[in-house]
Image (tube, rainbow, N blue to C red):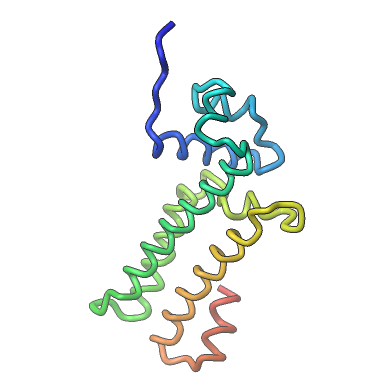
Amino acid sequence: MPTFKIDDDKLVSKISEVFRKLGYEGASMTALTEATGLQRASLYHRFPDGKQAMANIVIQQASQNLKRQLSALNKNTSLNHEEKLKTFKCILSDFYCQGHLPCVIDSMSYDLNNYTHAAILKESISALIDELRIIAMDAGLTIQESSDWSIIH
């Protein structure tokens, strides 16, 4: 029987699609094995802590990717705050696949009290708010105004 191989980035991408579409509770091991083409044993070999470990890596990668893009945007001194906000919206649109996929962070956050990945979700959301706050402060808002504005937007 031929061995099916999948690189880590592709694997996490496939797992992410399942979590985005079905959420944490709906992402069964059957759905995860079907999406990845791997058998349960192979998934557990790659993720010994099972679905929880898969969820954590998906959230971490999505968060790190967004944070990297937004941080680079805020460091770009050639853009004014309006251009940064427009670019920020494009980054988020890409993250949501132009509205075709739900946000993985949102899909995983329905009941934060029951999941051990709540801290990772909180960190991810805080990072997004921080990047929005920087844009608001660049626009001339005070620290308090920018904090209020970044939470609303």
